[in-house]
Image (cartoon, rainbow over all chains, first blue to last red; front, top):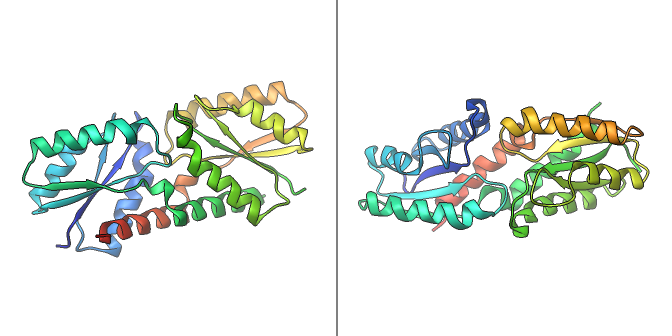
Length: 125
Length: 125
């Protein structure tokens, strides 16, 4: 197993169908890097929540967990909700260390891929 | 001018900082394809809204407008809010034709870029 384990963290929605792109990201990561534990968790509506996601990774032996926010922009959820949930999860599950990186939507390569998609979509008949 | 013009449509948030990645996407598109009119619009909190964004493009001479949702997942906003706003905008601005494509977050290349970012983030010290 390669550490840190990754907890992909997304907003969540009432529709289970909403989670499909996030599940595709997780599946692709597992195929590309099978030795890296990867779980998905959600802020609201869908399960697991952050603490449950961290527990799943800890149950697989992870001691270091990196939270990767699958958000496009850096709004109130990343400023307030995520730090609060991380602090609560650290307190509840002290055996693991948890850190948080920049949201995926601010990565330059992600932005390039989104812009390229938009231009392809514009040219589509 | 190349048509259809593109209206990038994102959720919006209370923090103006939230819009930064979307503005980077729009800027990159304008640099890559300067002949294609590109505007951003938001579902809530930020301006312009969809009708205002369409008006901006129409004022530049666009007669065909393609809405590209900058959403990761296909939830209630894409199922309900976007079609409702598009219908209202078509009724308000009948001189333009408007269509809507799949959200950026469901594009395979975008998913690959997100997964690659997450794996790079996992390896970062």
